[in-house]
Image (cartoon, rainbow, N blue to C red; front, side, top):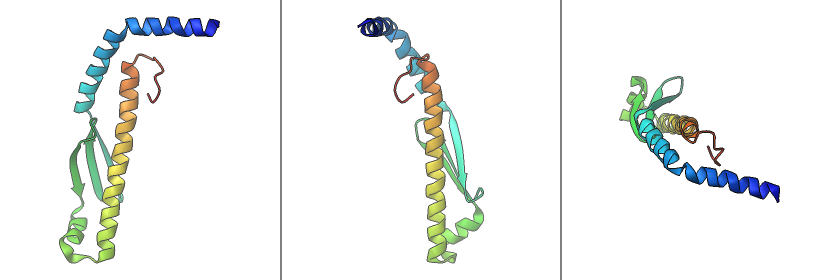
Length: 116
């Protein structure tokens, strides 16, 4: 019973801070839009730059890989390049997720919200 009362007090305190929390979260989201992460695969053969809104800003492919994409390579070479691109994209997504967790966690002010 006392735990429920304690939880209700915490919830009431949280409700009183909603305006501040909302403002901090909006500011954090704006900051995230400006931040970028970079991930690579194939020892740097493919690089992906993504912002905090999960938008791909740039994809850089090593010139040797471009030759493969231009049709000089085999189907196996093409498949390898496709896998490297997918791998770099997935790595960038994971980095943005970590960035979100850190940034939004700080904005939440240690509220211990699920998923942050």
